[in-house]
Length: 285
Image (cartoon, rainbow, N blue to C red; front, side, top):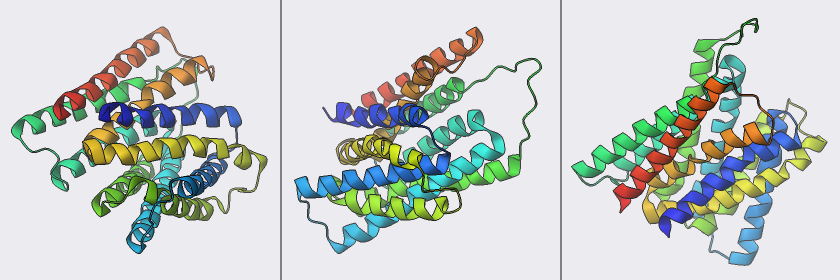
């Protein structure tokens, strides 16, 4: 049951890109809309679950949300500098490694040589799988993209720190899953407002993307529950299996074109991502 709970974030978060792609708007409008939706979800959770939110939960919840905003905004910066096809797989792989190592080193979730061996194998398989799903063939006559690799790498590093901080803070503080949702969403919204201030934040697309925040909220609360059940390393890695949904969804629902060779890479990469999740499940068992 714990593994099934850990897979719900993959479904919810893996659908966000498809939903936001249909709703439109620029990256900052989508992020701001998403955080508004997450806040509404947090308020709803607070009203119906009636959790006890102490000072500790408010402080670390808001800090966790601010880290998320830092990670999201810098991921968009990286996309501008080196493109989406490079940013997404590298960012996913970096987050997987960061959270797996945090789970092992900071929270001592890997307790034996067997755990370490399977954990490192799972991380390797997941990173390779994520990279393969983002493979792009070079098309003859296609204009060469201008890349700023140093700036892109810098943004990716900051993004990884932000995303890792988001999960590590609430795990380290040992916060209740339902209690932290509202403070966390407030921190996210504060960060999103700051980063979207100069990018036409007030728009119809922002309001439409509130829906994506509901998806994020569902994934987030189950991620928090899963972390307590199976640990940060397993919970976060399983949540990243949503890259399979994002990849195939973009092909069949958003009409993204793939060559025959690219489809092979996508299929192999997706199978490796699933295999990595299975390895983590075996390790937990």
